[in-house]
Image (cartoon, rainbow, N blue to C red; front, side, top):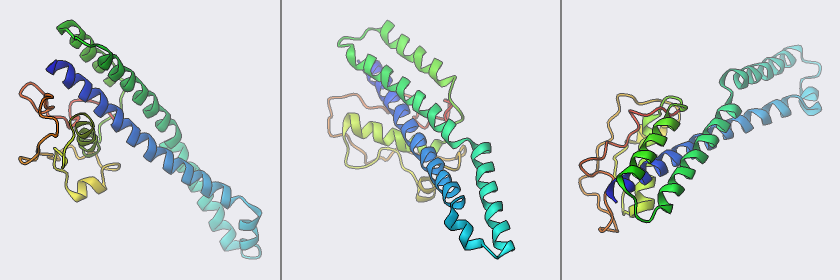
Length: 199
């Protein structure tokens, strides 16, 4: 049961990670699309009419935004995270559906997570730590996050990888449901995503 719980916790953590990434990338994609649409309207053309410099600046900005969308592919990356999110939720559902799991079930779930991880981009570890806290709170309940994350790490979680970052467990952390196994039990790896690939 402990091994099955840890697998469920990891699957939920990874799903929450990809939800956050998809939302962030989708937000930027829509923002840039809005700028391109506004920049191409007749109102924008009217504002620059008679001012060749302003017209060139507007054209340059629209071109730059289009280039950023093409290079960073915010929409495409968001769809990739949506697919990964769905795969992890399906796996979490399979784990939850098994009333009395055995070792073979757990091994199969862990193997499936390894297969999914092979399709993931590099991990943003601070964001992964946030997802771990969310998954832990969802499954165990808590009055405070289990992993400590600094304000800088939290602010830059969608931008920087934080490969050298440290996310220590809070020594005062406790779960509301004491009967359930903890994700920080002796056989559980430190859930910061350093050994998995996400982006």
